Amino acid sequence: GYYLPTGRMTSLEMSQLSNTPENVFIEKIGIFQKCVVTDDEQPSEMGTKAALSAIDNAGIRASDIDLIVYCGVGDYDYRLWSQAAKIQSEIGADKAFAFEVRNFCNSGNLGIDICRNMLIANTEFTYGLVVCSDRLSSLVDYSNQDSLSTFMFADGATAAILKKGETSNQILAYHAVTDSEAVDCLKIPLGGTRLPFHSDNVDQSLNYMQVADREKLDKIISEVYLENYKKVIFKSLQKSSYTINDVDVIFTNQGKKSLLINIFSWLGLTLEQTFISLPEHGNLGASDTLLGLCKSIEEGKIKPGNLVVLASSAAGFSWGALTIKF
Image (cartoon, rainbow, N blue to C red; front, side):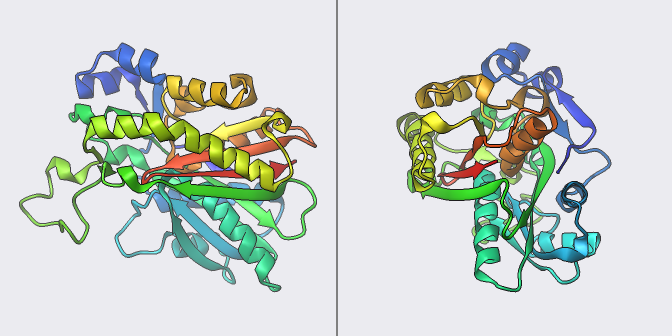
């Protein structure tokens, strides 16, 4: 299931806010508009709506759920607060154990793997709920040209129901890696223990996503980004006893147009074998891969017997890939 807020920010509006030519957004990044919250909608509220959609689609009751895994970039409704427990309360999944997973844009795929493993390990668990929800648009500083790559960040939520013993849509394997060389290049400086909030800095640009040492980050990404994407996908497939030639559909997190083209070119796949949500929805963080899967199922593009890969990259930087047999 998924939930997308009704608000939209267009490429023209992003252009005006950032004093950047609109064709940079349309031609270079490949985005025409993105989803943004209205009426101060919070991540837990979007996540609750996506969760209820998934529960309805699965034909189960919230009371059947044994495990709730909330996956997001990490900007929650409040600091030191449980998004997962709030969703448990809102949907009425009273018996479920609820907790959070945070691995930025890789959180969703990682959360599915963790949920699967916990279902298998615990004889009392049958159903798990994975919820991805982020409000990334509020982290963007459009006046910071060094952070142009973050301007596509948007808002939305997805959710998935996992059932132990299910014979269709089987999760086969997951593989992930981390390369920490660029760990300090992307962060929100304000609000942590190193730089706590106080009256003199709360309104400064430190409260938004910042890209530090742009040249270093670009160099690292050019050297290892595609290689690590390929590595986790191939390894997840290998663990599943398949190869890239067996893949029918692959969903990735949404980056600029040229990057997506390069990923699929490296893999020897075509863009017809994916769902590109960036032009109309923006980058939804941890929700990107599940949104692609949901939309493709709705459109009848996923057939029984299809081999599907969910692949993602995340700040830190990490890469992960999940292989599923439909």
